[in-house]
Image (cartoon, rainbow over the protein chains, first blue to last red):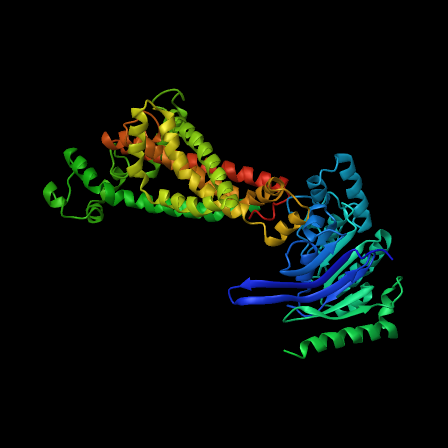
Length: 259
Length: 311
């Protein structure tokens, strides 16, 4: 077994606010291995997004250690080690879908030929071939979010960090995108960190589920999923699936009991 | 069809204003019309000119309805009638060679050229200041209060000083007026561009951080394009302000050409038609400039795929 891609040891993060300090993360310890699909689940304020942002080097922990690909998160960010998908698609309205996906490639200095080749490839990957010349407002919310995933994939980082990417979408679209995301993960073999507050989504997608609880944000439980890699949507009706979902729910409830 | 329907509200307002104007001509010009008519042998009530001073223009016209048509055709009316202004405008715009000093096109171009130069200077300065304010903390704290203060000084007080001082160092003609134009037009651009350059939200800025984008890339790829709708809104205010600036720059110095000079000449030599024609010439010029910018805005934003954002 090779060394974990992401490790966090005794991670602490306190935000100083006008209402006093907020303890966003407390003593977080976690290993994420290459090719893992890790979900972070918990109520709002549990620090799941903050932890993801720490991995991305967008927040700096106040104490503890975290490494990404053997580097500090900031070094990893500079090395463009990950693609990040936000809650909203955040496509530039003045760029076409193709232009939006080209954005990171332009910034990172890929050649024009390679840009075109990569845009075509990732559009294919998220099932948006043929939409390259459309503007964002011409696409549905689900399609926009797929385009933003394509944008995060375009420069071939090994790690994909996703912060509630499907939170704003309706259940049917979400199911469809979950299925697609699993296929994409299987094809690209990326390591994925995925923030959600949906139990079925977490259980359906993940190889590892990290249950978090609030005030202060900490890890309540880490569940290694026994589900097979191949997961049709109806796996959600199997006893194994329901059992994991129960354990997640118990973990969430335990975190809530002390407030 | 929708175009036609869009025209109805503004046209009805124009119609209303014209109607009020046309009605106001009667009382405004009643006294001088009456005096003139009496000299021409018309019998009026009250008969003595001194008594007429005590009667309001409206009463005078009502008591002597025969003078009403004459109020509309005075050579030197207190308030010219709409058609007189229209005729004066037509004659000075279309029947005189544009190079003639009697052509309003000639005077219009004198003012417009100063306006455009000032507008370009003001816009450039405004954008540069906005970039400074957004990217530099010290400028953020220091420039904005001064920019606001600069606009609280009455331009009518400041304009002669600028012209006299620049004249003293040998700068005359177009440039002093342009500087006043620039002084008035940089402000809306600063305010609009600061807002525009700051319009990208935290998520969009974070996205660029995940790409490890440079500040330069952030400016050219995110902040500047995001500010375009704000820029155009500012430019439309800026160009009107620039025109006002150029006209004000022509007023205090006895300029011999330009809309401002025409207004002054009309005032000083008792030729209200000249003043009014210049006034309307300036208004029409401003409307044309704003219209041109609106067209440019629509074109640009549509090209950028942001037509939806431009309402």
